[in-house]
Image (cartoon, protein in one colour):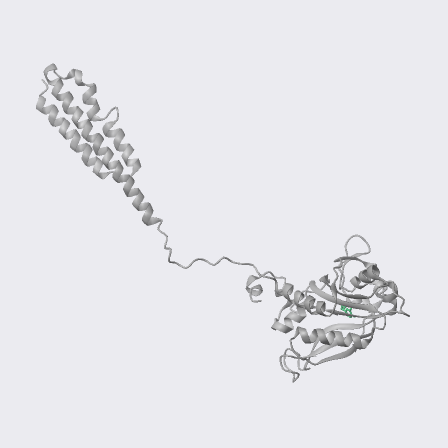
Length: 347
Ligand code: DAH
């Protein structure tokens, strides 16, 4: 005989059980587990409904009502708890993802110009003010342009001055200097006057060290016309050097030898570190070698399409990396193409 009070007590126990389990629920997943356990098909309160047939007739009404009440209480408790869980999740999200808007921002890394781009632009600017245009010449050259037309025949001992990268195709080289551009620009402009600078990468097959790289820039200067003298060369180069170093530096020309100029010279500037007294930068001499220069050799003029009886010209070649090294006292040429931002960002 099923006692009414027993069943109602049982229902009360089911309810208390469910509610205390619900009080432990902290997240959405536990909520679903709880729903299945206490309101799902096989939940104790649902079992009361399915087994109502076994309850004596006269008790069925009360038991049914009691079970319904428990079910309703559990449903509304579930709703309440669900709201609490959602709110708690939101609060957790808000605190854990909190952004401190007062923190200083991270600075975006911005690129900058390579120090050599800057030096080259400065050189272009100075020569532009003196009426020289920039002429771009190729980096892959023929042996003919890189050497022969510049009065350096094959087997000439002067070839030892340039250790050359050859490619598999005979007669093709990576230019060892910007001088072959002289021939290109002369052939393009002859018989008109030339006033040009020719910047660009050059390549030499060298042992890489603090002093020499296998790739480096050069800037070639070339002026061809009627009545161009050694004095014009000296005046132009002095003007350039003074603007470059931003002051009235002393210069000197020393006799030298290049196959494509006659006479040839090298220009030194008074050491701007020690003012000419002698220091480690100028190795005690008081002078810094800055460029090679000379009057364009008659053979080179002829190869460029100018009659050397009528025309003359001067040329010069400088290494902008060397100029930067002197200006900023950089001790190792390998920094330039080493791509280390700690070096590059200093300029
Ligand atoms: N081409 C020479 C070199 O690479 C530099 C040079 C010297 C260029 C004298 C010239 C010049 O135009 O007149 O060593």
